[in-house]
Image 1 (cartoon, rainbow, N blue to C red):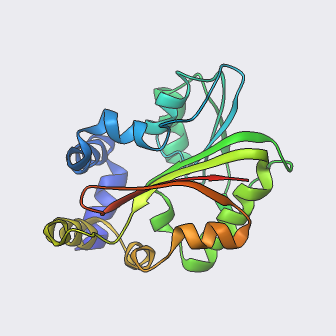
Image 2 (cartoon, helix red, strand yellow):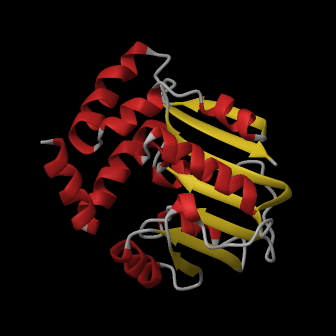
Image 3 (cartoon, rainbow, N blue to C red):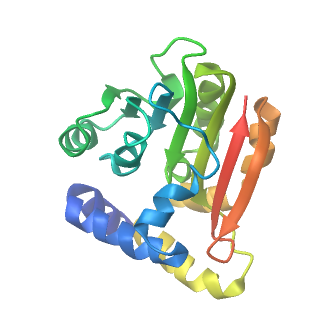
Length: 207
């Protein structure tokens, strides 16, 4: 069942968007959800920004409002076609996040939204290492993703969502200390905040 709902949500943009909007209600709506990872960051017109696993451009659409130098990266040709249609102001690259085709120290900010839970543990480590490589010294990696709820009231909703729309990797992320992994790879975690009863984490880490 999980695979069916998951496949349908990625096949049909309207279904994916509807699911995203409903899930975002726990933090006050989709507009606020998209802002969470960017709070406190200084992004100017010439800031070089990379949106990792950009999908069809939901977060990219917000990033281009701040910077004229935004690149979206995704491994899905279908997602990138949608992103180019939805947000033509950005540049796009088709590639795996664990093998980014960029030189060292290219970006000021790397962002990813609700994507790391899609990765196997080794993939997750490789992606974070790649993010560290492509960031400039002093650059910021900012992310939002699932977290083990600290308020038990949020467990049933998160459980149903993961069972219907996610795979085993999402459950694995709940057991992962992301801040600790970032620190191990070399980042300095400058901000780590929990939302929605602890079921959502936002981390900003500095290279």
